[in-house]
Length: 115
Image 1 (cartoon, helix red, strand yellow):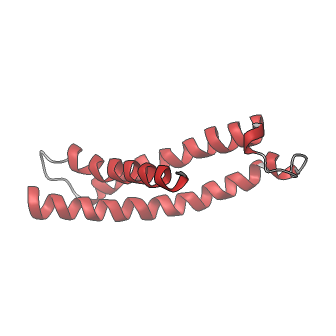
Image 2: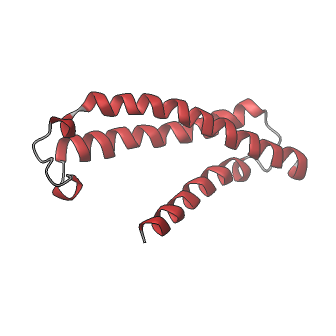
C-alpha cells in the first residue's frame, strides 16, 4: 500500500511539473531560459515548503508521536534545525537538476511538436 501511494504521489508531482511548462507556454515560443526559470521556481518553492512546513514545523517543532521511531523519544536529532537546513541546501541542487531536466523535456516537446 505504501509503495502504491508513493508511486501515485510521484506521478502527480512529476506530471504537474512536466505539464506546467507545456500548458503555460503552448501559445507562444519562449526561450529555454524562461522555461527553466519557471520550472525552477516551482521546484524551489516545493523545497522551501518542505523545509518550513514539514521539516521545521512538523518534525522539529511539533514532533508528533506517530513520527517518532520507537526507542528514540528523547533523541536530540528531532530538534536539529541545522540538519534539515543542510538537507534543504542539498535539495536546492536536486531541484535545479529537476528543473533543467523537465525544462529540457518540455522545451523539446514544445519546439518539435507544438510551435
